[in-house]
Length: 363
Image (cartoon, rainbow, N blue to C red; front, side, top):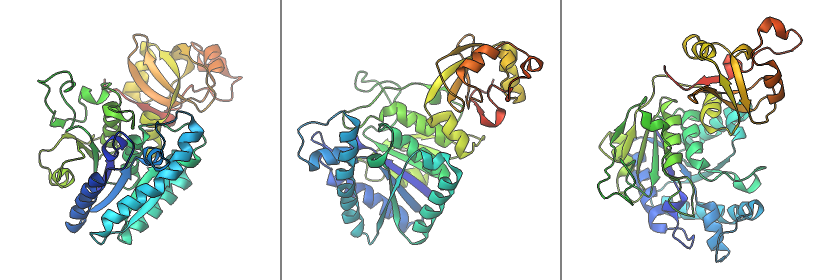
């Protein structure tokens, strides 16, 4: 089995930002146990920025992007040193791989990343993946490592994604405010829970939170990958997940599997606008799998250019789909409600082409 394991900042660092070596040791021990059973394992780790804060002796974490990027450059080698020190006890070698969202969008980058990681696995290494925050050309997106781990699981054709966090799984309600809350053991692929907005980040050191875990589980499910959310401090969470034992919350894979590009469109890209459609367009998208045409558009919200990711909703607000628009918001506005025959002067007559559209409802 090929398994992607992700551990977050709040699990890896204390309130001062110092790395918890005992957690690094515990995670490394579980990776080694999985390897000893013949499984291939990859690790996605957060914690570089928090580690950089501690490494420079700062009393608080700055908020400006440039400082955060610089801190990630300070903290990343310390993070790798901690992992390699722990893995060395099990005669294992960690290999640093830094990725950015572009690596999942550009086809050549996608293939290159896949081939490089595949070769590392062939060489017996444990690929240790993090987002390349230090040279990112846009703002660091906290919580993206959950998305990164889910997209990576698709990239390497993983069988399972294990999200290690500071809670025991997905609860029926917030256990911090409800003592009767219990862990949900299994979530089906079409369960409404995968669409629920859960609570945000649990600490100021990491901002993934349960909402980000749910989003990652949904990406994994739509990739045909089983996902498990479990406690990072458990001594056997990874092997329990692999063996199918009851641990944390298990999300079952969907029978519909999306390409990496459509996964990005559906779940990871930033939405820049909203397109409202009528009942006829809704049926055409959901039941017949057509492109979205201007005739079915009734309203547009937001300002966006060609190629922006937009949400397609009904007039009652139901989310139908996400897609890459083939028109700017101005053109969508001027052409909405018009038949294709009346748009002969336009080079493109689809508002969103079906090849760039992901339908998110089954009804």
